[in-house]
Length: 113
Length: 114
Image 1 (spheres, rainbow over the protein chains, first blue to last red):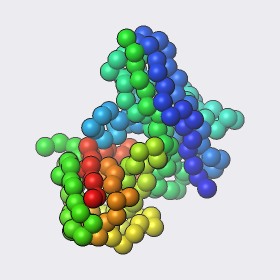
Image 2: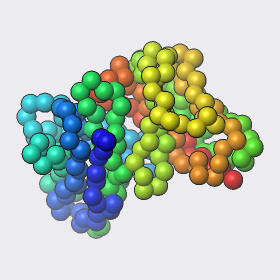
Image 3: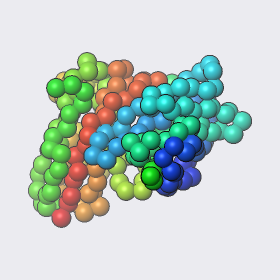
Image 4: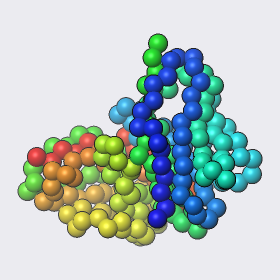
């Protein structure tokens, strides 16, 4: 079955430090990959998405993600974390010809001063 | 208003009550979605509507009944719910209901079933 795994339930990072959130998806046809962020009391907001082409994609708020087909991964990165980045981050995948997006369980990011 | 709005934001109901959740999108999109978000679990897709027709019913119990009267409005009618149905219910919309679409989410309705 198609699935998305986010191995880290929560991560704590110091403000100004770099961040990497991991995401692995199950094997399938050409994946469409997404990262969404959810701040407390809010719905999800798209950070970035990958369909094809350059495997390093840039998103909003200084985030980027790299698609690695050989590892079935789509990890999210940010070089310097700000306190306002504290939120829950969701990786999601949809496959060619499909309309159903499959979400991971999320990684909660805590930022310490 | 802009984006996707949901009402009410919080709802407490007994197991014998009947209530409805409302979602409205102001983005001109053709597809709308209901998701259930429970703690420590992935978002569960419940229903998808595209051009007011239901295209996905993800094995959801019949105590949840969706309604999409037009492409801007989506309802979730609730009756005889169970305590395990307590969760955050998120509505989303997207331009065409295709896999490449970005989905735009509302803030959710926090439902508590007593």
